[in-house]
Image 1 (cartoon, rainbow, N blue to C red):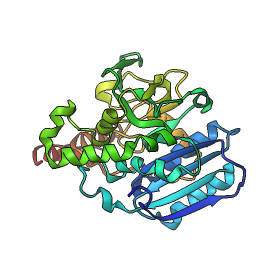
Image 2 (cartoon, rainbow, N blue to C red):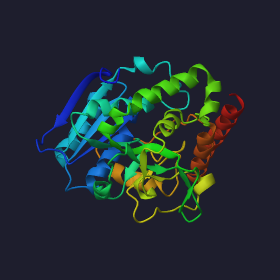
Image 3 (cartoon, rainbow, N blue to C red):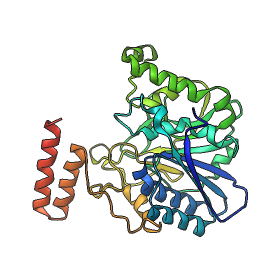
Image 4 (tube, rainbow, N blue to C red):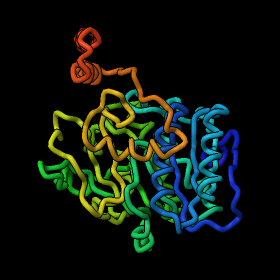
Length: 331
């Protein structure tokens, strides 16, 4: 199923030089904006590395977005491959919390096996603020992936581990041949179908499967990964409730991962760490793309109300306050 999941493929390139590094993403069509800004940040910080980007997407992007990706190719002499995915093999899996694109990470190793022996998988809600050279020192011999443990942050922005050897799957530096050899994708999908069919099966694995694909990966890859420092995947929940005093990240941070419901491309997000994303937005082909103005969760609506209070737009603040209350109590 993984080899035949791609319906169409489009390659954007103007440089025939062999790539030094491969990076892959699995996204929904409406995430082409943040992933484009993420790619811009990576290219800005790595002028001396030839990078190929592989974007696995649920539908073809429009001509406007295609033009923007082409401008990245021409400006930075990079390669961007766009793969349109057939979702039929994932329709029986739970996707209530996240989009079905979360399962594309199981397709990617099988699609890239003829391009490279290892690649970096990234979620779209990240930004790069440093070069990738430290990845070249990561030794994946006899390991399937390099990962970072899940953590929260203390008041000074230092990581506090949440679980003993439970990793965040938003950044994985993957050994392609080991992944395929040990049938990681097949085993994960099997577990996901098992617990989806019978939720009681979650008990034997000891996980709640709130992060459906991530939990499965932690089960299958137990003792088969190398744990990297937090700088490779700095998990920053930009919620003013939890991290309002977090104004900067550690100096050695390579990737900031904006996990959680608040994202830096939301107009109602006024967390200090949003500035990193917005800096690269302003120098990207998406510089004129408006920020998201359509909150879908009551906490987002409440933040939007606060945003308009700061702007002294009282009627809009009142409107979004009412909407947040209605959303919270009419679930």
